[in-house]
Image (cartoon, rainbow, N blue to C red; front, top):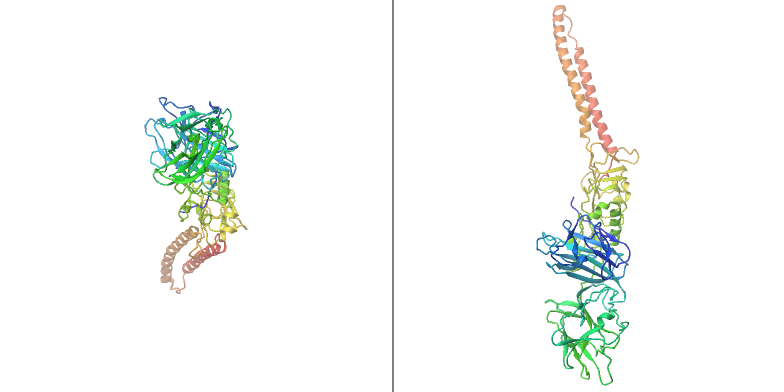
Length: 600
């Protein structure tokens, strides 16, 4: 049945309870703690439409990266993580191909979150790649999804991490936008810094230092970061890079793409030595040779943070240049660079989320097909449903509550049990639930959807009367054949039929009547056979009688009187014809008097 569904975001195929901080070793069977004291859990029992794989032994990897989960069936597969609505989270997805399939062909695929496009993942034959995003959660769950974008290139994932951040962090960014990590570096450091040194488990990698720069270590035993709004770990401020002379400048090269992108940048500074009264370190940040800050004077034993929003491209330059009164060259300890997303979608309508939740809770098999946001992004709507699109640019990806469509096809999924109440989905246009094993009465709310045009409940095990809301709905095409225990009328509650009669109401044309022809023929044909058998007998008898009468008349010269056989045949024929007429009238009267659908 053609159609399109109005629905919207529900949850996903799986869900982790508790607060966000979750570390999933994808493809693993058990739980364990790693060398950084991070507790990892496996996901082996969370998906049915996936496989757990092991990377080739020749590809060295950490224990976390030794397994992965690959998805080969559905176009979108999602992890759903419980979170606090309005909370700021960091999500990191890691991918290590490791030639697990022995094809030496690392795939590319889509990465999504909460109905938004995140990244196009490009994996490497033997290198770990990871993607990180920060955003404000708009529901009580957050979904991270993998989507197949190329034929025969199956999405996989090695690890998924979700971390709660302080709600005040990265506060200069509108919460309706996400931050995609471009780089996070600790200048002058020798090793990667992450949890437990960074309580939020951000990963700070050592930066490469050019020949014109030098690394310096801080003399401060403790570094106070209280005045840095985004809480950098003190460990990334223990080292810095600087130039060898005061006239030199530091040029930062995050590596922006050719096209313009919106950028959010944090720079962190901490003086590495106690200065005497004759010394001064002061410098200014320039973006594309335009002054972007007041003079920056790094504090000793403390942190200073500078943030900036700007548009960048491959030719964008970022530099730190000493002021004229500075006796020391500029320095920098750490840096974070993010791309700013387009405006985030609000996801699918909460009414539809509620209704879909009822369906998934009742029919668990739907969890094998439905995960993440039902409609978004638009190329990756849920299986067996359709959603309408907004024609306004950019917002065409947002499902519009008033124009959603339908359950396009939930047939033949072996749904069993009573139908739950999903009346909150008040924009449904089509519902197709035929050929399942749904039991119980047909709920009254099914006829009350204001936009519903097609309702197919055929070939189930519904019982009881058809609700008035359906039978009196002149705009609704209703099909309920193959439900032998369904009743036409609430008064007599007689079965609709024993022969699979279709009950429909259509918006055009006259009332669609039940087909009574088999019943009429079943009654009249035997009568006709019986009638003509009698007629044949009487004709034969008449001829024989006439012959005898003729002989007798010749002999006796008797009078010419009406035949008794003629009279009998006429009476029998009249009775049979009357019986046929009565049967046809009874069938027509019954059909007009006992209706399962309204007059159009």
